[in-house]
Length: 219
Image (cartoon, rainbow, N blue to C red):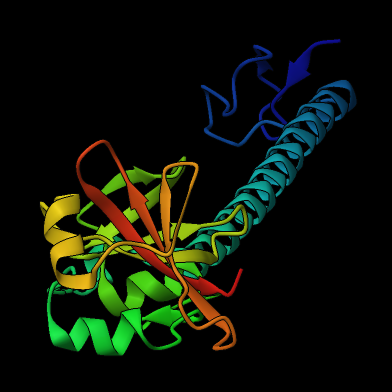
């Protein structure tokens, strides 16, 4: 069906929006109107689908960010960041001294020594004393070193052993000051003269040297 100008009745092409003769806006046929409405409906549907997709993606991104932030916060609480830790506290202990003999070799320290306590968490130790400066193996256990203190942790990251770790200390030098042990078992020395004082001194040795000393519950 042709299209005509409603004013001057001039024949119009279907694509013409204005009459070329008098300039009157052309009137669209019913089929053209329906076609335009369908096009508009399709465009509207596409726009709404696009909006819904964007909203969904925003919700997924927000949920992911929230989970990530929560996880990072929990990890931060469980393990302090290195940048927030104090400098490593290096404990200096003179093993062959009257102070050590009286305050450790002849006194109960089974719960820890020099502020390092049995049962404390690794994160608590590091918040107070910083990162360990190194590690060594004592009787098959990894001990993290803070100067002359060695700390071993159990599977729950709690302190299970607190050792005194001398520097270069030979067996002869040690026994010259503290005398020989009361007992030797599996290469370890035990100082336990008083059988009723509740503690024993366990000395871990290598071929010629003293590796570590531990104040333990009486055997």
